[in-house]
Amino acid sequence: MTLTNTDVTDHIMRLGEQAKAAARALGLASTDTKNAALIASAKALRESLPVLLAANDKDVQSVMGKKPDAFIDRLKLTPDRVEAMASALEQIAALPDPVGRKLAHFERPNGLNIERVAVPIGVIGMIYESRPNVGADASALCLKSGNAVILRGGSESRHSTEIIVEAMQRGLAEAGLPAHVVQAVGTTDRSAVKALLQADDYVDLVIPRGGRGLVELVANEAKVPTLLHLDGNCHSYVHHAADIDKAVKIITNAKLRRTGVCGATESIVIDRKIATVILPKLTDSLKGCELRGDAEAVSLEPRLTLATEEDWSTEYLDSIASVKLVENLDEALAFISKHSSGHTDAIITEDNEAARRFLLAIDSAVVMHNASTQFSDGGEFGMGAEIGIATGKMHARGPVGLEQLTSFKYLVHGTGQTRP
Image 1 (cartoon, rainbow, N blue to C red):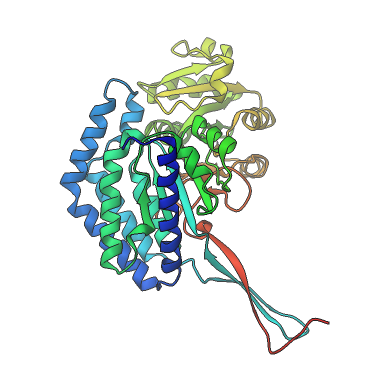
Image 2 (image 1 turned 180 degrees about the vertical axis):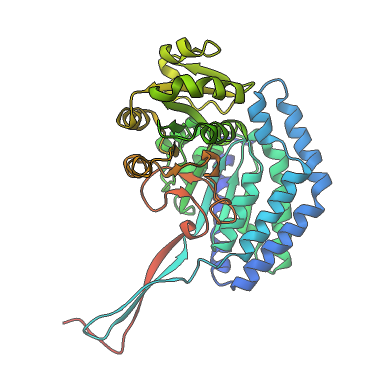
């Protein structure tokens, strides 16, 4: 759709009006009704498989040869990935409803009975880049938590997103809920992002999920409150008391399971005491991955190439990792604290005291001990799915699932009290 700037603003306002009305209706829906919509949407996704794969192939072909392999991997849908999307909707339906939870209850000396209860946020704008499954996950999480959502996926995934939204809307209609609970921005014009970020009359929260450029744009332009998801410059630190074979296995998974996800390890930090032992094994195991090390690491393992200062702060999203040697835990803590994006960092060690210090000292949203950083995922945390990983410290932090998509309000019950 080609629109003028005025048309784009009008389009976003219209989506916002529709979303606001849909959110009010959804706020009155029962848990059973919301679950029925999710289950019907999962069925509609499965029935849309041939059409969705054809649309996705059109998206993939449009960027073939123009984007790196990791980008194409994030964009591409397969029957298994579509089934995972549908299954995620069913898993979310099976989770407890976060709306209406009693968070606190107290009675005042004057007899006022006060409850703090969880309520939907309202209308959420979801801005993301190449992964079309984000649209399904975000829609399902917003639906179950009582929020309407306006999706603005990357232009590269527009055909896939269109089919996913149609499936979600069929599920909503089947359950008797407004189709406008889930909507997508109908233009690839970049000015639509700015218009959505400034639609504070209708949109209650914007969540960006993408690279640093997108997040910085959101931070600079938004009038609407935002829940930021920064890039994932994740570290795995191999302490001198690590089980070497365990460390190699964990890091290989953390780096290579899927290189294009934000929880992939990008920087490997190693104690000097064990460097001569682990570096050859790690290099063998990370076959096909370019390792860029500091001068000392390169001197010990010549298959590494020399890193630059920029490497320490880079989210590669590719088969590349940086390698830094440190003297001890304190030096590792200082290095990781300086370069981490605050997403996920891990220590591999059999020394529980060292692990305790690391877990307390590293100020990231997720901190791990003896586990792959790729477990930093809402599904793996039992949330069914996630709308993103929040790297800030206010409202929500780490994987953002159902509970994190609610706010709260106070319900005050009296018997005729007046304030003196």
